[in-house]
Image (cartoon, rainbow, N blue to C red; front, side):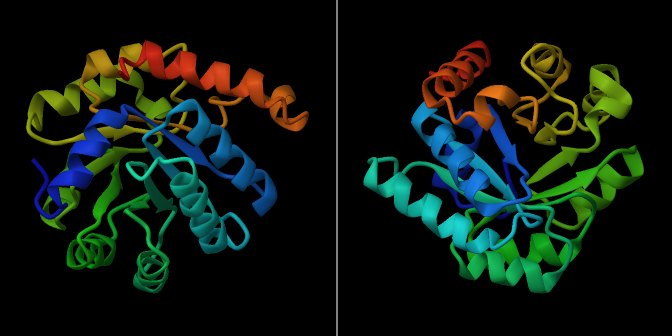
Length: 219
């Protein structure tokens, strides 16, 4: 169980299984990708701080989710590097914050706001530091550097830690990460077919994401 996160949000995150990690160079593409994720049935969406006007994208995604009757969707901000970014994201309504490393301020501010925190780690020492900082979730990043075997070794030591491998996770290998001990996975650019995204082929993209969710066991 998490240290700080409110129970309803925590239950939603556990059920999400797959978190699209949306990182784009323009806000219009990011918003479109988020809309696809909503339509496909994703229960959590991460918008990275590197998206231009990311907080506007967050609020637009929230409005879209409510219009479509998806009030149960968690929308968070990733690549949060300091307290100032964390505060702004929470003020904009982020349900969760994600840092690529151990940033104690992120966990502290999320806890105070009743939001979920994910702190990045790769080594056992970093996992210990993330837990000590109050992280609700430890994000193994970059997951591809160690692969499922690395996650399995960490899970054997930190069995009560909620892990989310991110970075190099795809439809083809996510089952291996789940078998290794992942509770949820973050999938970035591998989630959407690049040609379909460029053409804004919504039906094809939605079908693709729904297949990923089905294979991840989302009901």
